[in-house]
Image (cartoon, rainbow, N blue to C red; front, side, top):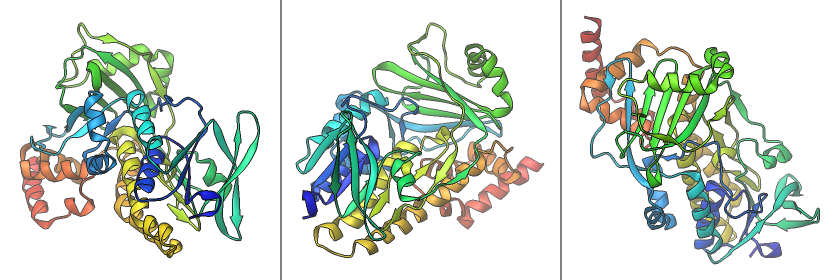
Length: 406
């Protein structure tokens, strides 16, 4: 058992922090879950909500799946349209992800974590300092709304405090920042005519748009423009947003639909990646890897990174084992699994035109179900970059390229 009674202290009670808290506690650890916001129903606003199918196994291990079903979460499969062939031929039986708003998801997951034996929830407290044992982080100093401070010592400190992580700043763990040349405006609608089991993405080269169904008949519709169009949106966001939606091929039917939220804009969402672990501290979710929201990977990676961290470090924490070695395995594993995805997404988020090989591959995926299935696995992050480098797949893409050139 750690000093002060805690094995792990986690800063941030959103997806990654709550998932890590529950999984650590289920393994037998004593966890302090620190959250700056005092309201247990607080939720993240700037999010597209889609949970990729790659994270569904983690949701099952958390025991969260039945709660999502009771909350009306939509099981949706990916669908994508490009100007290079139209709709891609994704498998109709591909594993579905989840569509559920953060307004519903965050409180459900937080309650599940807080009710887990071994988790002590500390809302309304922000991290203001780190405790150290030489070069190793040894816990945190927190401050409440009454400005009283206290210390929480633990063998492992977990930063689940978002892309602008306070713990990263205090621990001097900078992020590598890659530019993002798109912006996003989104709103929630009711009564939209769009397949209720499809999370639709338009890659318009260079603009993009998304239609993601959620619970209670609510649909999130996002317009993601290249920054060359930013002045157009700033001059009249409402009109520019509707113009982009109106121009979508096979776009959502909005006749008779009702917009049930304000139009929310996020003008700058840089891609950030930092070292997932240093001595005594680990980063999960957006604190480790914050990526362009266009492909809807943030929620899924928050769940998965939490599970990977617990899987590597839990045995060392509870058995007084080699925590440094476990953190190093987590660091290398997260980079191996998600680093190539992050690099591909960050590269595309520069707003560059699609390359010839990409256009050919997408055209092939619109006519060839085998190519479509491979791209679906990669796009939903169930498969790595090697999924697209299979020589047998290359031959099918090449044949499509010959037809395209002809």
